[in-house]
Length: 269
Length: 272
Ligand SMILES: Nc1ncnc2c1ncn2[C@@H]1O[C@H](COP(=O)(O)OP(=O)(O)OP(=O)(O)O)[C@@H](O)[C@H]1O
Ligand SMILES: [Mg+2]
Image (cartoon, rainbow over all chains, first blue to last red; front, side):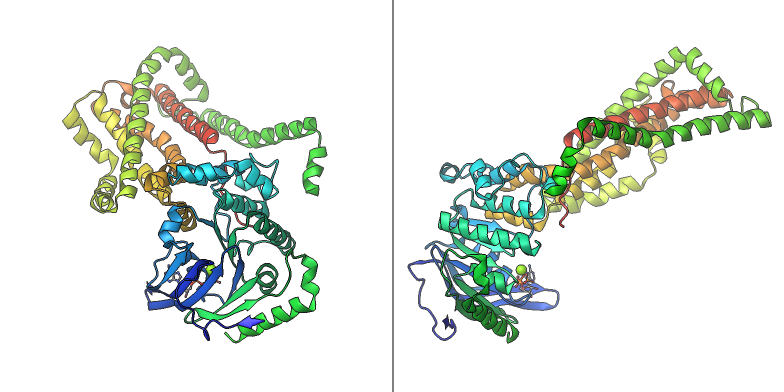
């Protein structure tokens, strides 16, 4: 049911991995001296997979995601994305990134926010391959609200717009940093189900950071558990629940076993 | 969802009357205040028998506005032009310098202290210097009006151009956006609320700047008229002139607010 990364160190980048992280160490210089955010992290994210990331606050989840997206410079180690370096992957528009708050431009309508990636970055080739903004809003269930400004939308709707924007260039890797953290539980459940549907429709690789154990177990094929101080891989837990998943599966014995295991791991971090 | 459909059932007519009533309720208190102050003014002068050369009654001011209309207008036009030109160039220069500061930090480090220093010199003290250099024409007045607008706009514009959340910048980096794209797609729009806050201040101070410029050895403009009326104890004319200057400042202020409402239809997104 589980496998521990630390016991079997992987050799070079694996061929079928979408994202392959090798001995990644990230340190920050702060006023209080050097902070080791991540130490010797090695993990493979399979192509087309959905991996969720759990860990105590400050264990480096965001840092790992940002390093993959080329927003943070690794101090040591290597990251390969689809066989390319992170900056090549970024320039080829292989990433979609969804932040904790939607980060919409408040002066742009929902539709124009979704269109933003097509207007910047000078990537004519990806623009051709991209979807139509209207279709993306439909995919996230926002047909009819195209011309609404962000302040006229609810938090859940804004997050849907952000997901549509992240998907418009058909990214091969979707990175999500606590995207539903600020939402109420019912909205979150609904968006979780929709995210699984979108994942299956698009075949995108998804890395999803969350603080919620049930969310991590419900969404993930695998759950990457990180330990803090310094941030390192605790365990990569496989969730043996079939897809497509239903919210009712959260009441099954398997699900409860996985969440209990995850909780025990987090408590020992 | 239910609250949405509830409010949809409220008829359009009812909503319109409600909006009209709200607008009326908004305007009533200031209107009453103005009427009250004018009545008080008239009352105090009649009760205490204040002579006209010390303070005129509202009636005398109004009749002067009519009888002196050509004279007032002749002096109003240069003041209006000076303040408008000063407003335009002062703010334009401030905006351009703010863009340069945000684009290049070392230019900010070099020139920001100078800007602060110029701002600390009282405008009243700069005015004679400028009159000595540029003579008695329009130029020194325009420069003073522009100078008075310059600093608040510079400070606000720099702040506005920087008022972009780190997360938005991360988003633009993930999209491999260039600095120019970040400027045109993000920074300009984020700076607009800050810019208009400064322009509203500048709309009234530019009139003050023009008038202060006209106080020093000038023979035209509302500022010169104020000096002349004061020295000759023509207090109804003095009050009428001040009223004209104030009205012009209100016009400029309203114009700025109007453009602002047209341009900024969005609100910042508050989480929760
Ligand atoms: N830009 C930075 N400068 C200095 N230190 C940083 C920076 N970014 C992150 N850190 C530090 O690195 C560590 C990991 O931070 P990170 O944001 O990745 O944690 P996290 O797991 O995402 O936490 P949370 O669950 O609270 O979001 C923390 O100790 C944090 O203080
Ligand atoms: Mg985080």
